[in-house]
Amino acid sequence: MKMGRFYFLNGIGKYKKYFHAYTTENRIVSHCRRRFSCIFLLTILSLLFSGCATEYNLATEQEEVILVSDDREVRMGKSISRAVEERFKVLEDERIKERINNIGERIVNVCDRKDIIYHFKVLDEKDVNAMALPGGYIYVNKGLIDKAGSDDELACVIAHEVGHVTAKHSVKKLQGAIGINILRILMIGAEESETRENADIALAELFLAYSREDELFADKLAVKYAKLAGYDPNAMLKFLNKLKDIQKKEPIRQLNYARTHPYLSDRIATVRMEISGNMGYVDYINKSKEFDKK
Image (cartoon, rainbow, N blue to C red; front, top):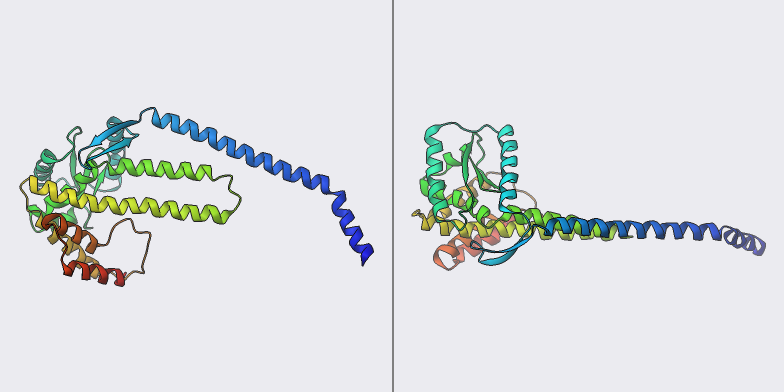
């Protein structure tokens, strides 16, 4: 047994120099990766921050660092809008187009950002949905228009989408995505895959949290803009309750922490708070019930 053990240890000793060379090579490769990552990071940051500006955002009432100029944002929105209109049919009903444009114009006239041209279009889709692209390109589905019972409700929905534009949520989301990718690049040299996986989960949760926060903030701006434009902000509550009724008819889903939108009960409570200044007991109970169901 001793002889065998001696031979085994002797064998390791014989190949020790090769093992040392292998581990040294690994260290060199790892070092080169980290160095390349740092150089790449510095290059990206220099390109980004060359157009960086600190500006006061009237919608958020905060000084913000914005890496994307207004011109670039508009060009980006225009490019995305082409892709949207290639995939979905734009409704050409003149009466509906005029109605949406008139409501949109009234909202824009009182919003916190008038340095861009807003575009309002209707998509011939049944889903009750609307969306805002960078640079003021706003789309409303025909299904949403049919569901809305009044111009007040439509105005609140459009004001919500305009709020995303005035607060530059799309631009900040893009900057957040760039930040996440930069952090992932810095972790290229990380040894443990579990560490990288946990970091990815944490970064994704942070990114999604900003998205949920953006939705609630856009609801607050919707109340503000609708009221200033002469519409009834209480119509926002009516429309959100309609969305809640639609949601009740859907199959019950498992609790999902990776949600990009807040629960409707959260939105209703936020809007009610913005209108009246307080959240009622019913809102608190509804929030708890909705959380339990999901």
